[in-house]
Length: 303
Image (cartoon, rainbow, N blue to C red; front, top):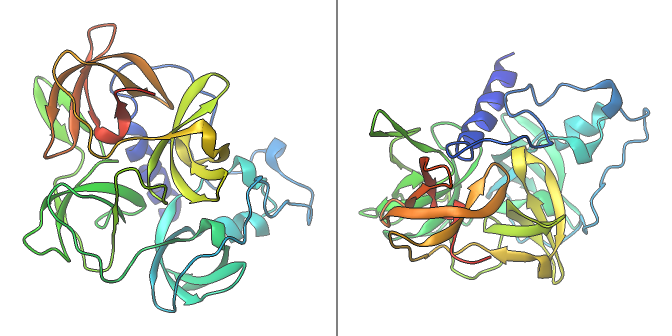
């Protein structure tokens, strides 16, 4: 029960970042639901679960060593054991420790248990990274759990900076800004600095799907394909040519017409009211004159 509550709260927290400017029906998992629940229609025949249902190479090379910290979905093996259709599951990327690197898969330890995970689902974090104010980091919610991107607000200690999590929401209540989580000092060796224009795990992308500009972040990539974590933790594959990186160093001014994240897609119906560069937040007004606050990963000038 405790496990289910944790997973549900994490997904609900991420979902909060998409819902502050309007609402719409979206096909996909309910972020408040128990992610381990199996519907009868989702069950595969015993022993017939496709262990890799995505059109993407599972044995990509990852440079990791024993003891290194990585981000990976611990429930991949459990879904296999429980005969679940992997393409319909929710994947939360947690912190884990490498126990044994491999050519096609990597053995990791998560909460005292060891798992073999396909290399395409392994995101390495360097042990010696340093950061400066304004850098965007790939890390996890260290007083909570689960992969997060964060902006550095204090780098007095470059190896253990203080950050504001971009994937946790800010909202407006009775005219006051409410943060889902206050800034937090993170530990050394627990983050990777993302770079503007770099195609790398953790980078936010808008990818084309049925005429919409869907939102997600990169898990892994090849020369022509991108493995993406999309809405509510579903995994998708897109052509690299159908993806556009969301800028980490955008420039916005009041009155700009921009694309903003509307549940699972970027839509061009928003106007900038205010830009807080230090905290990576943009105040937007939609076409119904509703104001919301989004992170810089949820806003783009052009797509």
